Image 1: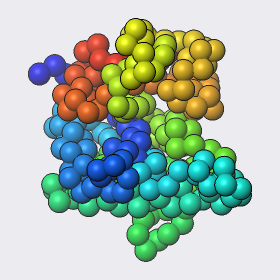
Image 2: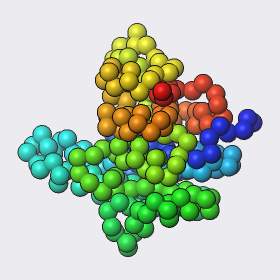
Image 3: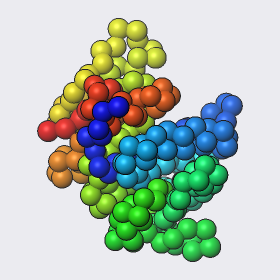
Length: 238
């Protein structure tokens, strides 16, 4: 096995990573699959932080389209990310992985408040850190929260786990002739409006030169191959 090329990563998961049949809810077996993948990274000595969305529990856009206040819809989504974080924590700890959930929204009964230096200390002590509650503010996506937290904890890379094996110029599920990119610059990703992450998240990574790696986590070996330097998925960098 090759040595890892990253020391510390931030793994961004969509809420769909935990979804049950029909793409909704929380399936404990899916959480266990994520935990197994994370354990493989820890076996390589990699420090892992996770940000997860809430699309399996709540899609704020649905509420907004029905006239719901945007801030209210976003706060509901943030609460959903904490629920997903707790499910992931439980799966990790049942496998013997010491895990801490930290939330940008204060809820001390179930999660530690997010404090940057404390999060880094947990990572240094070989604990997995799950960062819930988004940024704590409405109008920001969990992609942006992932980019922000990755910078704060001094991660070497932001890994965006998706259902496809990289970034394409068109939706590969609708167009079999879609072209996959092995590498994109931040500017290309923004100009092409490829929707791999929102523009705020990409711009934040660009300004701080944090590489983004997009891969398909549905293939369990991809994460290990990616962190050991194999050409997996699409890398977005300068």
